[in-house]
Image (tube, rainbow, N blue to C red; front, side, top):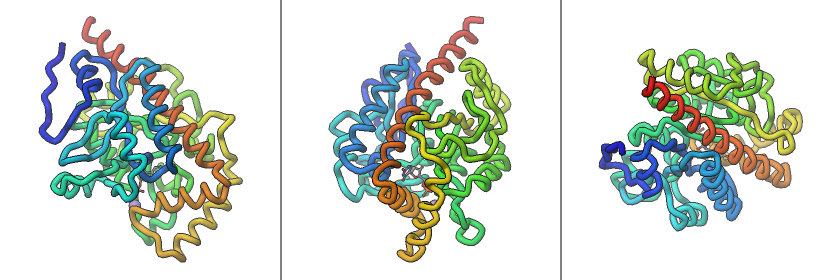
Length: 315
Ligand code: PSU
Ligand code: MN
């Protein structure tokens, strides 16, 4: 049994603590998507399903949030229900963490702030349907998600379906290249775009083998990098939306956002909601599907990664 150094800012669920003690693979999950990404009750149903598929794939889920001056590392059902049904829980990115900790208020963690927690908790795997990125028009707005900057600071393997097409995906890829973040596309040649199978951009690397992915992650860290590795996998074909179909809707939603003066942290949730309304909920279904499939894959890859580490120790 491994002794875990308990960080004073973390509060573990029993299930996660037991997994870490017994070297079972753990997958971190964010809570902004529960509080802001999906409507109630789809958000609660999806949060529970994410946890179920991670367990079924052989890993333990750690849904992350902020409460009572701590990061929750693993949430019980009551806490998931609270986050899914309470209105106005703030979206907390990395810059906001100290304020929420000091105020002891509730906070829904984004990819960026969840990675801060994963790093402190020594959880090397994280699942996110869609990461933040460089926003369209960032040349003038300077709106670049802190998710990208956090990747350069957190030693976590992030499994995702790429970034949402409300972003500028070419600039997002450029930024990740500049910051030396490896992007590995699992069983696919393209960088996916959340509810679209492809962004139209070729991925720098395709890998089809789970053990090779584990090895790449470890090599990245053996090199002394203290940053993330991105692993992408597209949405299931049957739930995917055609790129052309959402493009026009996104353009309209962006004009509406500009008219309404929406910028900063509320830009992503506003645009996602506008697109969902315009597609009569089709993107909500796609969003749920991609959250579940990325969680499932993260569970499987976290297990392969743990097996790889254990085999390394034996040899
Ligand atoms: N997916 C959604 N809605 C969201 C997000 C994801 O459908 O609000 C969140 C994620 O938590 C992601 C964050 O980390 O948006 C990025 O926001 P920003 O661009 O403000 O950094
Ligand atoms: Mn932003």
